Amino acid sequence: MSITVRGGGMIVKDPDSSEPLTFNWDEEHLPVGVTIVASSFLILGTDAVLTKDNEGILPGARTTQVRIIAGTLGVKYTLTNRVTTNQVPAAIKDQSIRVLIQHR
Image: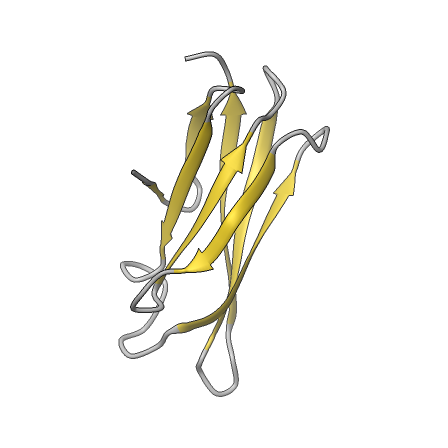
């Protein structure tokens, strides 16, 4: 099961868990008929312990997904989803959340 997140929010993640996250671009960021053609995820923090895999664009091309793994206890990371749309010219949009690593 994936957690749907909103840009500007924060989640708490246990350092021993892996969390699939979904970014929903449909509700607030994309005009009707516009789809996502490329998606990437960037992680910024004081170390490189929080990692990611399984990045992708979900069916319908208006939501994206990534799984985050590990992290250092007590560290806050910024996870950014950068997408490119099918608009002409293409739009590039970012949504970021904070990820706090704590035991849950």
